Length: 234
Image 1: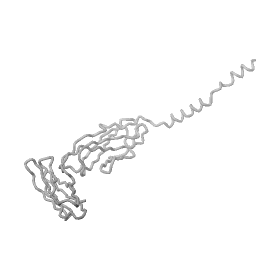
Image 2 (image 1 turned 90 degrees about the vertical axis):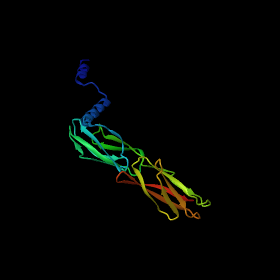
Image 3 (image 1 turned 180 degrees about the vertical axis):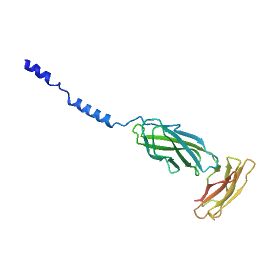
Image 4 (image 1 turned 90 degrees about the horizontal axis):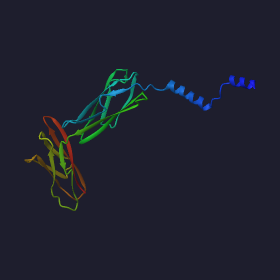
């Protein structure tokens, strides 16, 4: 009896293997767990604005600061499309460092509301991915209605009109060019309410033909833009 009591006192109580396994993984986790205190804080993560009439590009910037107590490295900057570029002034930010992401959105012939994103990838597992958004309203330069006029080969070669209207009084249409000798394009106007008339006439209707009409417009003193209308015989 006394032997059994002594044995129980000397031997440690039995602990399930699962407990020791859990403790092991806890210690490993505490040793290698990322420090989540590093944090990039942005003045704003979204931009919503209107581009200037006739602008070729829309510049943007996002300012931020590392308000954590750990160093953060921005490993990659990715944009949602090829028309948007973004770059950093540096990649590694110490606690208290400020930074800025600058970029441009190439407008091209786009009109209306455009949404683009810039995504940052960092080495901080507490903030591995940061999304920034740009929303730009591109004002309409010129209204073209209709954008396509067409004729059937069995029809008569009667003239058809395309109406052009500028959205700003400083926009003027300089001239038009047709890339096909099978169509004529004549511009008149503007009338009293600022509408131009572009008369397209097919010269022959015995075979299928296509044409692109380039409309050269000017804004203000020097900004030029080219728009397109289409004609076809089918």
